[in-house]
Length: 266
Picture (cartoon, one colour):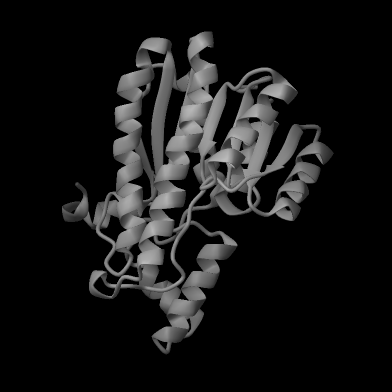
């Protein structure tokens, strides 16, 4: 088991990619602390993990609230005594497309508050406990929108580019403490949220879901979207000792989206 007894906090762990990461990490022996805003989703994931012999607890947390962030870390230390791995998977994406000229300020501010400030606050509290132990691994989930332009979604895209920069800067700061920080950028991933979003866009364009998806898949070299489990296994690699010499990196998990858009990569 690659994460045997490793205490791991995973934000956004109640659904989608976060749920997949929590499940895979628990199967690899991690003691998982699943955080997110919706406690019912979190407890359901905990039940699934425990039914398979894993160890997990759920802590309701809004990462944009500093007091709740501190409570998450405090409860983790109270329950397990340490933190070995942090996976910052939480994200906020505004529900509607918005050009910059029409950008509602609450869209912009909420995206930064959750995606960037929330990540910084939680990382700040976690490394306070990693530094004295001279060990730790941090995995930040960005997006393909952080390495390619994403018109009409500049608030989300700006935060995802920011996560990659934050990760690289963090790696330079904490490397001397034997703490690694890496980033993972998935393209479209077959979560319920993704499928709902594609259905909305298809309707907006007057197309069936299948027609719209067939058009979308032309942008992927492998002609399919990513599975949540495929993101989770890359996160497992980055979190584990298999990546003991890897830090400050951004791994793209995209089924080859960027292969067909080479001019868009920064």
